[in-house]
Image 1 (cartoon, one colour):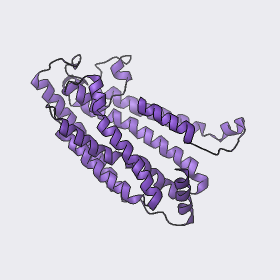
Image 2 (cartoon, one colour):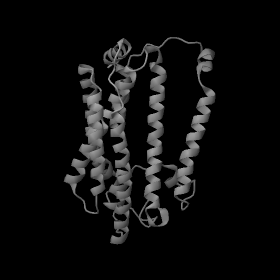
Image 3 (spheres, helix red, strand yellow):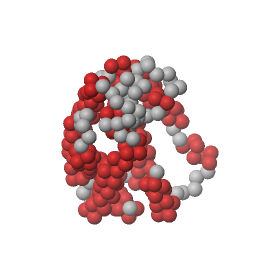
Image 4 (cartoon, helix red, strand yellow):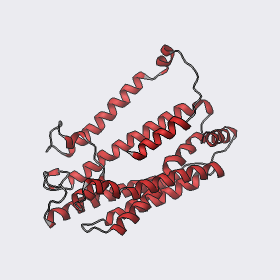
Length: 276
């Protein structure tokens, strides 16, 4: 929450956007209402189907089903039995590194105009960092946790900035708004899909298709059997293998990104640099 609040303050006082005045009705008519309804409805059906097929042990009005779950805190609290506050603090190694890597990438691209190098390097590091999570076990090793989270953060951070600049450098200035809207939507869509897919893999690898040990266990301080904990670690490893494979596909995809050539691409990159 403190980092989110700081980001909000920075946006309020530092972000300057020149927005042309458009009549309200004309603005509404410019929106693709049919496309929006179809794609939102299709996305909901897709995610709902995955979640429904994964488990039928919890009611749809329960907190377990309504909340999205993120898997590092799940590992910390269920397997290592961390208190929620300690689980959150443990993620600082990832969050702070990711933030610094994001800012550094923006500065690097602004100075050099090279978005290919950070994109490909980040894809390699992210694949390695995600692969390292596979070795997480039942024991608590702070050195392993911190180092692995730092590596993952170094990989994920640049991928917030570099692909966005790459996209902007390949479209005409008049199309930047549409391109960025599509980019933002696709990133949000696949972030949601990633959580659901991870839940499906995890649930199907656990006895009873639950997300916690013994369904009602998993409270900090409680003791689970070695067999239950081992099964949970094995299920998490399967899930991390899936994510590592996806990161590998990401790495392959980066080699299809071309350098910006032509006047329009250079103009867009200069505009992005001035905006930053």
